[in-house]
Length: 207
Image (cartoon, rainbow, N blue to C red; front, side, top):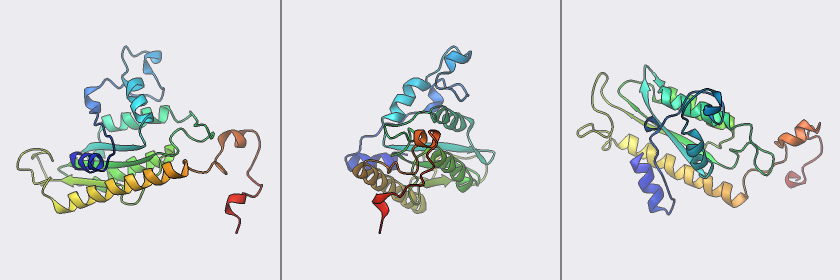
């Protein structure tokens, strides 16, 4: 994650790293789980940061071949906001882009990436090419990526994948920003609810 941050910040992109494990994030699919029996929920504050970001990168360790339970809670809580619409009546996540970083000491980078990136695009994030990167050390107990002597920061494949992911995220975010997001033709939820089935021609795409 540090490599990705450095590339973004050097390119003039403001970043913030949040460690979800340090927060109290109850599981569930509601915007505020305090309204559903939990004493504390840090998601509303974290959600404001997510909604203020053009790029979201989710990082997770691999546990038993899957992303961590904390990572799944983040995805659940993102899903809790999916009923909200932007000013074009699209998913609130339209016009944003996302990627993921995976680490661990057993195989599973691609499996975890598939799960996370599917969830993000399903919510409305645009996923650019090669939007995932990861590092796994020697099989079995061992140092984590950031531990001294792990070899992770020196792994050329991981650094290349992380660099490509970061630039592709920034390129995608820039394209979306310059275009004012995705066109609303064909994905306007309120138009669909009102009975419109988008049968009328879209002049923007006429030959």
